[in-house]
Image (tube, rainbow, N blue to C red; front, side, top):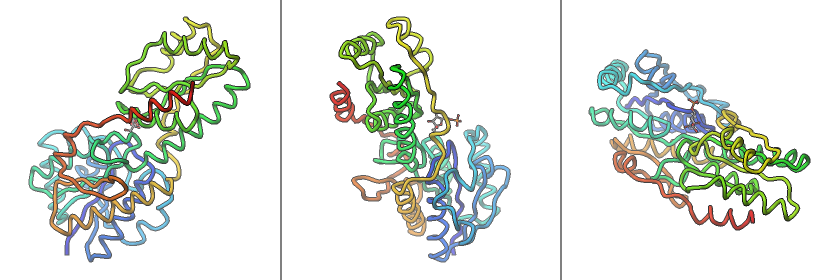
Length: 319
Ligand code: F6P
């Protein structure tokens, strides 16, 4: 009988609970024992582990956040920290580990594999910034949260004939801004992958104002810069009545979408099957709606390509 450890690490994402549920339930189905490790790698180093059973994951598929809690752990970035982690895993007779998180969390899993400890990664982040997979768990829910916020801001923006900048998370990736901006009918979408000039945005505002359209939504990905600074520049050039909304952590919470729940369930089961097959140093992903797995080093070395086609289309539609 194998013993599997599971942890969530880095920024939480809606659907992480569904992934935990899938890992725990499928592992038990296949006759394994499962330890939940609280607060990510930090909890591992602090020996904060608890054995999980079927009911540990009851009633969580629809809940945001992560029942295992999450953290970012500096100590685990050191070789000393990781060796300490392996010691704890061995003490609890854990044979292999499932890590749910983003690229930082995957780096930890990669290093554990290098130390000979089998680890598999499941992508859980609202950023959708991992090149090897079409989607990460949490992205769809966050996208819907942002689109909903943009719709609400659009109402008041239209009533008051204002320009509104909405700052969206995503770190260095513009996906969240692009797709939620498109769905929210944003007039301008600014992402880190495409250069922009403030003057161009201002000219666009002036042109649409001349046409009689006095309100406008600008969606700004956080990886480009600060929405308040951009707002000040636009006011200086155009004198626009402008407001800024930084959506912040509301994007990370909430009930996961059906898409995220199903994705998380499929990925969780695949991760367990890989471990039972004796595989290590792998990440699970989705390509063309098929669950895939890939060598973790290969996955982490890939560069994400930006969906320029959709970006250009959004520009056409917001003419
Ligand atoms: O990686 C997820 C994410 O929400 C990013 O979009 C954002 O830049 C960052 O985490 C915020 O991190 P924290 O919750 O530590 O402030």
